[in-house]
Length: 388
Image: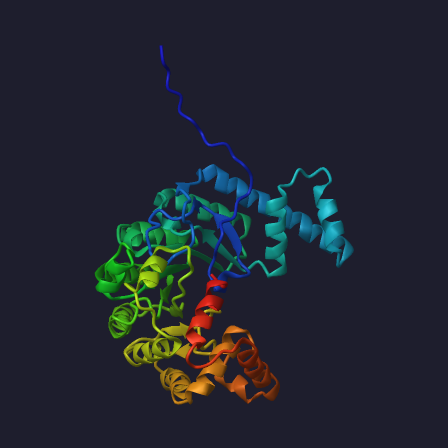
């Protein structure tokens, strides 16, 4: 007689996923799901060959409790002895406390960052049951009532299917910001890159998040349409965002590492990648097309050509446009030096070219590596792959 036993996943200790937004650099990372339930986007190198799963709710609670216990020990030790060397603190924490070292390290990093924010991982945490999410958030707030911000990634496709009441309950339990990878508002680009969502669904999801009272951060990917759809990518994406009016618009310039599906199309010529100059023109057209919104634009990623391209609409729109126009007005030689200086880390903004020391380093790099206006984009492509 064969009997089937229901298998239960055993708790393997504290977990953290592989990525988080740059704006969550000082957040405690709490892993609710593993990997991505969609995982078909042709431009994304993360989570490939990894199976999606939802962690048991009690495992997440145990993770939170482990961090709570570690935070208590760190704070009590520091209070008793003042500044304590890291090695001594770790040694003290390990004596008779039976602490998970991964939870302790996460707590240590969080304490050093001020313990003001928490990021829920991985790629689409809102796919779990709303009631489970509410319980996890409630426990998190019970353990750390001082936390000001709790955020998560989510797919538009998932949010569009959650009822307004459930979204509101999740908001009331503590989730107050959602990061969505909009990437593009063009249905042609979304289909081409297998994003698994339409422009209409992006808009619906964004409006639902706003209605629930959460902050909304939408990610946009200049260059994702390639040369064929560059202008459409800018125009349609701006149109979607004009209808949503998110709190934040974050730029993430397209890079194509060898490991992604889009690389095959790039190698065979089916996808023609925009040059830096073309992407700057696309960003210019994109910003020009953003109207009637009060969003904050952020360029907080190393892949972006203009790190200081930041401001609030409508007041700072012309200032941001001026940054891009100044680059486009440069000679090809000056553009080349700026591109190299930016990607080598010598520049973060156009104004850095006025610094003789920084300018000299960028010019030397161009000479030493034989970088010219004719080959600069090829060199930049290789550099950007290393940042993915």
